[in-house]
Image (cartoon, rainbow, N blue to C red; front, side, top):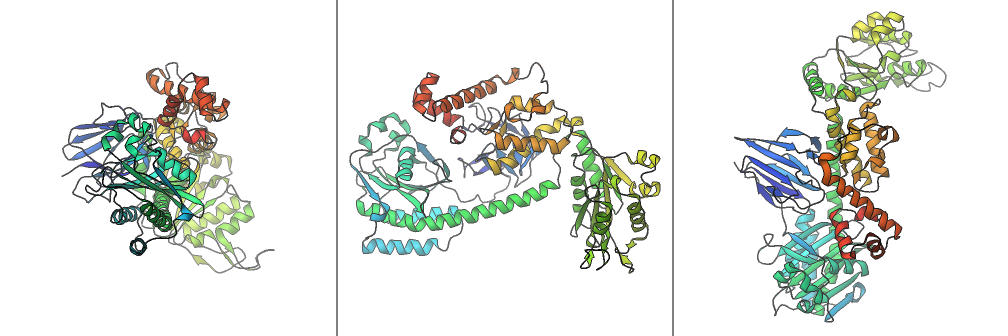
Length: 622
C-alpha cells in the first residue's frame, strides 16, 4: 500500500506527497507536514488522519473550504481515486501503485529582468527564411504535433524536439488566459526530464508577450538585476531565448529556453527557428487546450448533474433524510414531501428516482401552482386534436411521458378539486383519458408529491380531498428548514461559491470569517434557495476573490453577529483590512502603483509583493 496525495492541477502539478504518518496537516504555515505556499490555502487548512488502512480528511475551518470530488466537506473518509481540492490545488488520493499522470519539471518564475546590451530581438514576421536543416526540423515537429491531442503530452514532445536542434539545457512552455498571469506552465530539463526545476524570468516572459517580440540574450550573468535573485544565481544561467506564442493576434503565452554552459550559446538562426516553431505550435497548443477545456467542462457538467441530485449537508437532520431516501427509493411507494419553499423537496424527489429501479426512465416534474386549472389539466393528461380552441394537434400529457418513470407533482396542495378527483382515479386505477378523448390510456409510473402547505389542515377546511391525501401520504418526510441545520450553511456556501466563481471569477472564491459568521446567524426564510441567490449575488458584485460582508444582501447584513466574532480569527481580519486598504489606494491613484505606494507609505516593490501574495491582481484589473 502506497497512500499519497498526487497534485494534478496547480503550481505543484506532478508532485506526490506520501501519507505515512498518523496525521498529515496541510496548510500555508511552515509547520505543516505538507506546506503549500499559496494565499488560496489557509494557514492550517486541513488534516489527513490515518487509522490502519483507513484515511479521513478533516477541514480545519479553512477560508476556501476543502472539497472532495467537488463537494465541500467538514470530515470525510477518503477512497482511492478521490479528487481533493485545497485552495487552487487539486490532488488525487491514491493508495496503490497507480501510474502518475505525465508531469513536468517544476517551473520557478522569477521577477528578474536578466536582459543586457548583448540582446537580440526578432519580430515574428522577420523569421521567414530558414536553413535546410531548420526546415527539416520544422517539418518533423509539424508532423509530430499534429498527432497529439493531450496538452501536456504535446508540450513535452515540443520541448524534447526543440532541444534536439537548439543547444539549450532547459525549456518551458507558459500559457496565459487573456492576461499576463500564467495559467499553465510545463518545464523540461534535457538531462533530468521533470525532476529538475526550470527557472524562468517572469519579467522577460511578460515583456515578450507584451511586445510580441522574440528575445535572445547570451550575457545573462552580466545583468545587474541578476544579483538580487539567489535562486537564479544558483541556476548559473548564461543564455536565455524566449519567443511569443501568437494565434490570430491573440497572445497565448511564450516558449522559453535557457542554458548555463559557456559553450551553449544561442544565435539568431536559433531564434528564427524557434519563432517559426512557435507559429506552428500555437495552433496545436490552442486546439489541445480547447479540447482539454471541453473535456474538463464535460466532467464538470456531469459532476454538477450528480450534485443536483446528491444533497450537501452533514447535519443529523440531513443524515435522516439520506436514510429515508435509501429506504424508500427501491420501492414503488407514493411519497409525500413536506417542507418550506427552498428546502430542496425536488432534489429529494430526484434522488429517490435516481436510486430506484426506474432511474433509467424519465423523471417528469410539474409545478401545480404555476399553471391555471385548464392549462394544468392539459399539461398533466394531454389533449386530443380539436379538444378546445387552439388544440391544433394531439399532445401527450406528463402522465404519458412519465410512463415507466417517475412523476413529481410540486405544490400539489394548490391543485383544483376537479383535478384532484382525476388524479385520485389515476392513483387508484392507473389509467386516464386525454382532454377531449375517450380512449383509456394505461400508465405505470411512480408518483412523488411535494407541498409547503399543511394538507391535514387543508382537508379540514374542505379544500383538499381526504381520500387523495391518504393516497399521497403513504410515506412522507418533512424537509428541515436551513435555520434548523445551521452547521450545513458553511458547506452549502462553499459549494455555491465554487459553483458561481467558475462563471464569474478567474479563481475559486473563498468566504471571509466575518461573512461566514453573518451567513451562520441569519434565519434564511427562503432556505437553501435564498442562500444560493445570496452567494451568486456576492460572486457577481464582489470586487475580489473573497466574499466580504459588504457583498452580502442587506437582510443578511442586518443580522447581529455574536460579540466574540473575529476574536479567534485575528490574522484573517488583518489580512482583509490590508486588502481593502490596497484596493482603495490603487483606486485613488487611478491604477498608478507608484502613487498608490506613496499613499500607503510603502515602497512600490513591497506593494507589488503584497498584491501578489494576497492574490489581488484580478480585482485590480477590473
